[in-house]
Length: 363
Image (cartoon, rainbow, N blue to C red; front, side, top):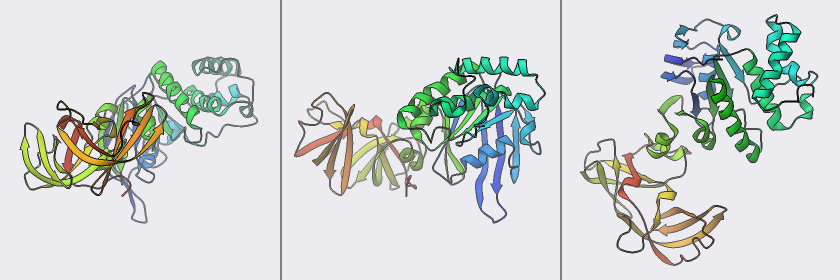
């Protein structure tokens, strides 16, 4: 099996009622990569998947797979396979018959179908399960049967629409690793739709973050998390402390903001001008208690409100003015217990991102 690239050129989708689900979009997915499209419900990510698979044609623009234009070519004639949230396994067929279902339609004889099914069940770590019925398998095993069935037709591109959302947390975490391993072994291009940032960050080579029918950022997981391009991306992918202010100075790639909590510095990649309204974002794990002279450059004084134990982390909440600031501390056994009353918290200039004012996730 070999993956192929997917290119969307100026595609958009407007329905007859006038609703535009996807505004004009260009996107290049590389052959053999694990590419996730991340965004809230209704942002257009499933519409993009359906345009790639051929279940709908874009209102305008072109879809190409492996350099070949796909517009007007139906789903069964595209080099793609699709896995939905609802796995739709056939309950009366055995596991191997489910896996080989697509091969029977292509006229492959029974012995060859069985061999292919057994090979794929080995690939997805279901050796010895071929003659069971789907109802005899766990949720995670049924998920792997669906992947094997999709791979049986040797797609160049495997499209996965929120496939793990019905599983419990532990199983979801396990299946993330399984899917990533299967993708690596096969080299097939995976295009993965999810609203779960943890899934996208864990599995993806690159992520496209969507909002209201538009792609707001495309990049490796680390870039999307550490260097978000918009306020929406900053607040949809991971947690943030957010403060508004006015730019009062710029120097060496940093902007200085006058905020209700004092003057704060952060990385400015937007070239903001003095006097501009802006927002500063800092992750809770980049915040720390600022004790001593060698502490962080940005400092804020506040009152400790509460501590929440979250297993490996302790979340410390500090009230400063009208703002509640969140700090994630590693649980060292006593983490956070020594902090109470008035504390100075802070963060380094390079750990904060300054951006023009924009819509936040959830607003």
